[in-house]
Amino acid sequence: MEYTVPIIERLKRENGKILVFTHENPDADGIGSMLGLYHFLKKKGKNITCAMKDNVPYICDFLPGIENIKKLPLEENFDVGIIVDAAGAFRAGAEIKAKEIIRIDHHVGGKFESIDDFVNPYSPSTTCLIAEILKKWDESAIDKNIATCLYTGLLTDTGSFRYNNVTADTFDMAKFLVKKGADPFYIAKMVYERNKPNVLQLLQKTLSTLQIFEDGKIAGLTVRRTFLEETHTTEEDTEGFVNYARSIDGTEVGFILIQKEDLITWRCSLRGKGNVDVQKIARAFGGGGHKDAAGCRIVGKEEEVREKLVKEIKKALEQNLVKTTNG
Ligand SMILES: [Mn+2]
Image (cartoon, rainbow, N blue to C red):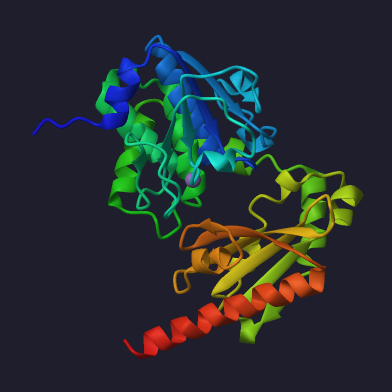
């Protein structure tokens, strides 16, 4: 049966100025989604701009079209703004001047922006959702550049096809994008094998802070501002560090605390191994995310912040224990 997708019909009709944007502290899924959509809409003759608040993380600097990304906030007024890979336009971290906002995303919950939103929390990446939209709109317009942007988000948001968001459909999508020109070896090399020596030094300092709680069920790492200064690195360089906490044998929840510039705000990333819903822990502190990957911000002294967080993780572990014993 033929069906229509509201966001496609909406964008086909739009002849005004379109802004595609993503969340602050952007990752490869946000940027890949933004650029994939940007290239496609440009091909369709649309007046399209893409922008985000922060700098491009260097792992994304190879993505085709990366030089076209503008910096938020923009003075310009747009007819429609499309927020990708975020729970709402508020996640942009900057003012957006658009008459209307539409959201394309795979986060749990989040803000309803428009009747034309395209949201599926079961999708492994937002680039997967973009690929579905573009495939349905005009499969033949998906070229190597678009496929490269979309495959990169799929690769990183699935942890290289290792996370529990991976299904048979994920590989179908990967196959589709590779057939369209994405080069898995090249992309993996660009994303994972361009470490800078000072980033490894930052990792070394970070690993030395490893703390284990609850007989190894919880593992935590800390990045103090001084580490960044001493190694001449930035917060973006801590991307993926939290996975070392999760990777420990027997760990259920891994977390990392990253000290912000003001020294009293801590950005916290949480990673689960399938048994604990870390999104609920993040939500207790006003954050959000997915079942196995979530984040929040906590204000306070380092020890106090860690204590509060560990207490909340323990609570989640206990609740999970009750659930499993009750079947
Ligand atoms: Mn994502």
